[in-house]
Image (cartoon, rainbow, N blue to C red; front, top):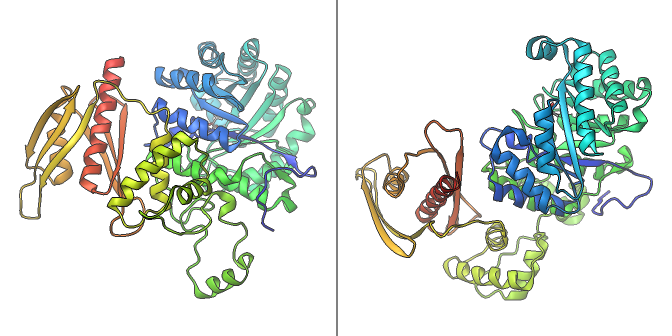
Length: 522
Ligand code: KIV
Ligand code: ZN
């Protein structure tokens, strides 16, 4: 059965979707996002229809605090949550960042398993319960919506877990989350654990049971579905399955599993499934973490049929080999390419089918950019349009008067030639030319030349370039990650161009501007 609509079926229980892309997801190595990117993701999550957005861990750093506060200020229509340990300073800081939210939640956590009690916390069971209760009570003093997580719950002795859950609900927790912190449990064990909590905790009906599964053994989605079938009412998950180590339960997979198999699970969510692909693309873009082609639901191959037998079947009747339609998760209806003769109406239609809703003014900007690109490139693909729309509509994009602007470049490079580059930039309307020679190749020589415009040393930690779409005239999308020595902060620059060296250069300049802005704000 193809299910494309949102939850309108009264026989289905609604599951609360708690998205942790901006907190646990951001803990994925290399996935750090800046404030502007987090705001963009938060707004996409609201559009997607998630119920709760875990925006960050406010005590972790001033940057985390600032982003939770900004998200709390701007987000309307979803609950905004901040994480805190069961420590007064954490909880106070979390509230400070959340207090302007339309619908705030404080999420407090404390580890409960024997391994964590003995080696990490050096606390007895009694001390853990007292600390957890005090944490919930302090959070409750600020906010009626409080979630408690016994970290490593799935390796916690069940009798002790029941006591912790009962005590924290009695202290005021409105959601109790059962994290499989290390991705150790299995669907069968999960079912038993949730059923036991429901049977043995006398006040369990006063809170929503939540689940938070890590994917170390590849079972995060299956474990989350097992928990829901056993009675859990909230799933914690992340776009593209981002999260610590192997990641969290993937939002797009768990949401589509519930929707496609409503007949079996009898649950659904209010997620707008057609926004899944655009949101996945956005998160991939801002984190620089590519979605594998064969990733379920949002991977490029998720609806591609290679075998002749399958193609024949799908052409005769789509459901022979597809359990969902590509459009139901936000892939465009067909692969028709646009070109320089395509008109505004064709572009508007394609933009809409890609999941974007633009104002007339935004569409004007997108149409101009589309025409410029179509002059350079014969065929404009969906991926090109997504890039254009993204650049034209990112209202959080920042720039400063003191930013460097790329003007032009001249590069010489070859297998037997020493690379050399001459780059023209402009700074506060004054042009400056920087040159460099030598190094390992074009990117290295460009980076060396650009070092001359900043008076602090930088390291190029990562550099990627990939084609935005198919075709020999495809645009190149470059992403550069810069790091300052003795600092853990990284700055990602990105740019797209039909000339890959220009894209590389613009991405480097973008990253340098981000470092410079951070310096002038500190
Ligand atoms: O994995 C985990 O246990 C967590 C908690 C903070 C909920 O991320
Ligand atoms: Zn986690």
